[in-house]
Length: 216
Length: 333
Image 1 (tube, rainbow over the protein chains, first blue to last red):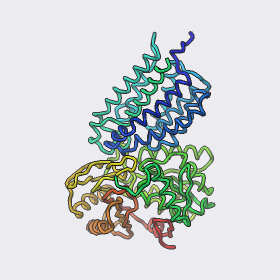
Image 2 (cartoon, rainbow over the protein chains, first blue to last red):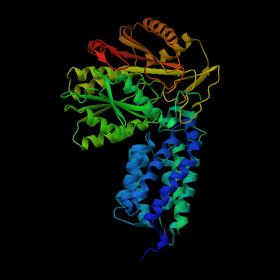
Image 3 (cartoon, one colour):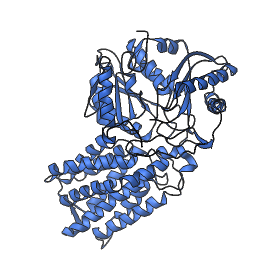
Image 4 (cartoon, chains in turn cyan, blue):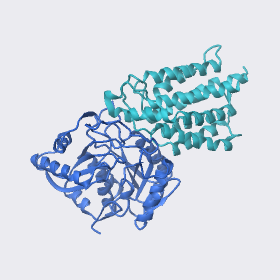
């Protein structure tokens, strides 16, 4: 069956998404940093903003490139500019996602799910965190799960579900005691705070949702 | 925020430029990606020793680059791990054909970035070994946390491994020594004040005038407990007890006692701390055969101290005493 235009993500939409990430991380820089100051080391906002500003700088050179190349460039840029744990984690997500997107100028709903699931697997291998340890995984796992296509599904609905799942997942980190990352040093004192990594993951998916809706 | 800076964005590069302007006889700087190497790098047929971490802990690590200690240091943004491209470039710049040891402090970001760098270097045919330093007894070492943080023992490992590499030891031998220092070193710190990351502009945590943070991390991560301020002697007791009982250090052990300032505590107070720490060590039967007092692993302008004990033997003592010529540590030359 032919995939309709509205049920796939084009490379133009991907570029628009990345542009949106740069904007959203600039806008939420202080908020992410404040979350990180509470249970970490107060650098998450600045790191994400720096990384995606660098990604934005690469976008003009990616105009006619396939999504695999775009994702690979995003990965290497984040790995070399973000630092902290988020650099290797988000970098690995895009690096692993790139494999299934090589040579493609658009991703169907099924393909988007597959490459994101590969990205998630890579991220989890790198960070060794599972759900419930107060990390970005708490937002990303339910979001990717929600993205999974089912019968008579639309990508639009799936992206909305993914964002809702990410928000719920991020909110679920509030009462948790951190078991990975710097917040884990706090023990019980980490409870009662929203995890900054789960929060930045939600922003990433919201930016994708917005880019998709603005083009479809 | 009152800081002697021009712009938060330029803090690291301007400090690096000043550092090489001051110490150009000992170190060279590379930019994009940023790293420091000893002036005569690469040294042929010598194991190279590299470390790195967020900036804001000066003189660690750049201050320890030079003969008898580190071959290269990779500074990240303030309190942020450096990135794999930095470690990869530094590894290539110092590889003298006998392999490269990465000394990594146990922070999630540092470990992941160094892991990626080691993978990339190995893919290019360079022999790389890594040791993760985790000597901070304030943090519970369990599968339920990121594990103990790397603090004071890091620079002791850098000094001892640097001396061993200089003496011609193999990568496997230098690796074993690094593991030994980590296994025999224990630390704990405390803060009287928070610190302010230039990009953030306000203190990382609020600490009332009459309270202190025990077990603080070197990035201003809140520690494990907050309590009412006590006297210097009482604070030192609260630091020494968990350190001594953790290894444990036993009567008759020869130790190096390292009293470190976190950036905002004057040397006069560090000697008050040393006085009490040495008294407690002696009471426990420990023989302090070497020591180090000063601000070597800092947390920007944080006031506070950390104490490190390292159990010594003849080999470690000899390597500690070996000549070192770096901007921040210098003897025997």
